[in-house]
Length: 317
Image (cartoon, rainbow, N blue to C red; front, side, top):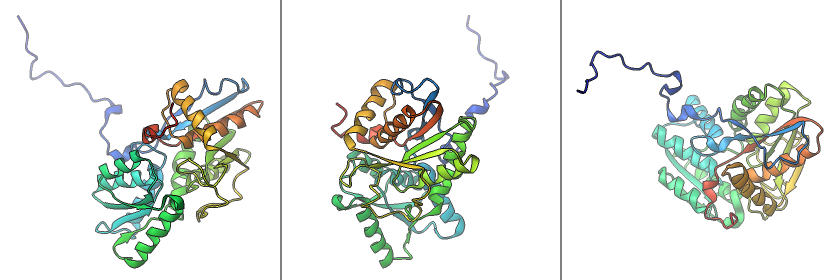
């Protein structure tokens, strides 16, 4: 004979870890992952970690500055909810804008190069963003020029956060990414390595780490040439230099070609189970080179975005 559960039976006490939260509350606090197999040839006293920014809700490190720039705009009154957010993007910041805009009921228009991956464009449209596709040969610089023309013609219609020149970009990483790296390494990080795009990640994390310990070495990564396939990264000598960029902040610079970066991207997927994009591959190549030059240390780099945004590219096989 079956026994019914009494209506008076107490319900389970909810776990603190299952407490409800808004989508945006889940931006940040990404894990720091030890890279073992791809770093098998580094000295025994050196550890290499990747900050798993691809696990943010929007799939990239750009969730952090997008959230900060939107909230700063709304809090200051520069962004009125009846305006449309507009900005230039290579894809990831745009996806973050579109995701947050959908969650907050805000209209979003984005200019990006026409050769941005099909996955990125489909994700942006899925979130309801309007896309303005620009000359692929002009890259994100061309997208910036298009946005500036539109905003100049209709200044009251748009909120233009301008991620390349907005201090909230790097401040999001100073307060968030950099502070988390210090906490997750128990302050033992000795080297930080990441690529330059808007430069916000490098600027913010580097400033936070050096405020903790000025001896921490911070290495900036760039594509080797102006014509490259590393979406989101800038060849600084030939690109529009972001206003938030301080060229004197890096302790060292290194460059890598697209082929080297994508080869390591494949290895991360097949040897570490980390499906990330080519800019993360470039970062890890650089981090491994730094690690091999050390006798001891803790090297941290950024796994920028999810590899699902590049599945239509032909470098996976």
